[in-house]
Length: 106
Ligand code: FES
Image (tube, rainbow, N blue to C red; front, side, top):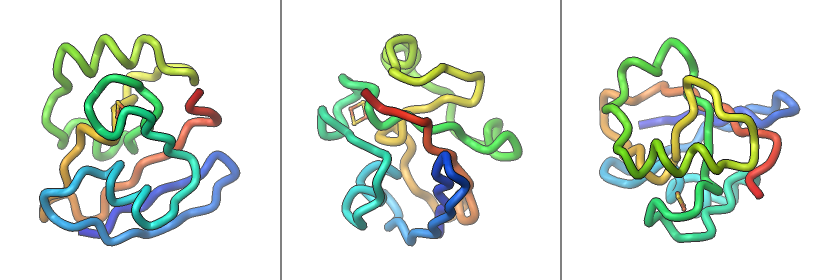
């Protein structure tokens, strides 16, 4: 699937993320700035925070308790659409998903 990442300055990047791969892995492996992923995708750092586009927010699997707790400690403001990009796994039905990057991760 193709996932669109929008930076705080409005710049958009469409990245092909392999099915079964997290959005975090897909983004960092293709050199996208704005996702730090200090813990390497283990749901321990909250430096892979993204805001899911509102049109998509309800189409993702619900967040786990761990993800919910970590988002409370995210560096940037938490919004109702906040998620950890390491916990969103790319699937064919997420083709076209749009996420926004927060202004900071640490
Ligand atoms: Fe650390 Fe996602 S990479 S919580």
